[in-house]
Length: 96
Image 1 (cartoon, rainbow, N blue to C red):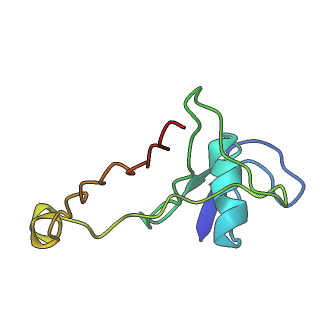
Image 2: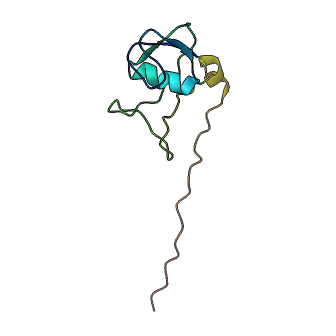
């Protein structure tokens, strides 16, 4: 992804335009060190309920994946009803 640096960074000075990997570019954009040059799609990361980013077991940010589920797909799946459970019958012992 092509980015334009807004602040001093290890790989560029303000105003420099460079091609960097998408993940690195998105991190620089999130940290306000750079801005995207072309209007490519930005990677969206999952957020916790408190607004912090979700991190996987290896310390990487988790990307949000868009689901292809529309109302027509949901309507096609039949809803399965739970089968009633019969109560267990217990035998009573005869009094002696």
